[in-house]
Length: 365
Image 1 (tube, rainbow, N blue to C red):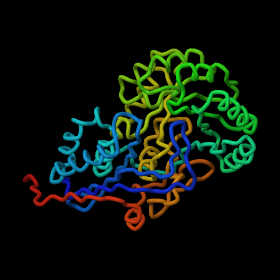
Image 2: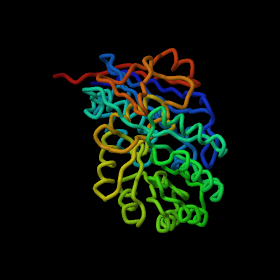
Image 3: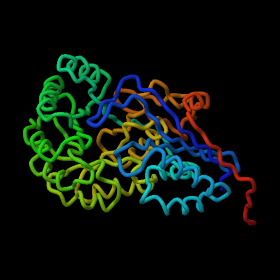
């Protein structure tokens, strides 16, 4: 199985509504997408949205990296190409992931073999920020079947506490809540917020402080009235081990792009549980490609609501047969990944590169 060509795309997908987090308001998803084709015409796909402030990687650096590695990969076997990428997977997992997962799909990873229709429960965010709008949105989400809701905090401790209380009242025990500060609090703000929470119905409090400030996150976890989950701080098995030593950290969230490959993602999720914590999986800023990949892994490794809901936010869908959602769950149908619609991909591509082998030598025998 040798690589004949690699197509790389930088795409932009406008969102149906602004996605507000503590550090910014997101209007467009702009991931990198890779399609790798072998000499027999089979394809594997991967994607990664490299967000500023989420690790040390940048979108520009990721684009340059992928083109450089793609140039070196064409003509190689899948095994040789994976070996090449393994040199970078620790330092540049996000950029590596879209190439590595495309190779894993191409070689038929068992993690992607969907034998029977499977439903993966998802969470959805509460977008409303005014207290008057909250009850109607909560009712709408519950009617759609979502039983875990995400609440973005990290803006102002007092205002966040009031909004969380309003959402708790609207939910009235009918769904679990996950609070996510996206690194938005200082140590003092995080401690103030976490220690004042009413824990009723709150499953966890995610990433209170800056990713590199382990001491601040530990201080918040020590006083929090609900378990803390680390996300942006976690990029390796060593980080998972470190999180397990912090009292009050009960959850760790992973994304495919943080571990760099499907196999490493599965290993990381299992290690979280082995260290006595609960794994959470999912990328809220991924398209259908990344969400489908994570959904396949979630089938056998995660028992709580997945966060791979990014594909629900843009106004366009990449799959020709859109990924279904029923009663708040992603529906995975038997067979391979649904086909990417070339017209939709082309319409939203802002830059692309094709790398093709000029000559492929297949070993005898």
